[in-house]
Image (cartoon, rainbow, N blue to C red):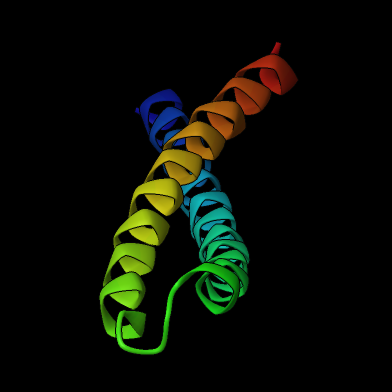
Length: 85
């Protein structure tokens, strides 16, 4: 029974650390994408089209954040698996 508890604890720790890494990566990615989107919006979009470009930027930010989050989660779990070995 103790072995089962240890395994579940290790699994929970791994999952928790992966979630934390994912959160951090998502926040960082969103910040970077927002910053880049603002620069592009200032250069390219006229003032009337600014609202539309903001919506597009938000969608792009969500997509990239989602992609980076999944990538970092996968990387974190791989690192944990390698560390255990």
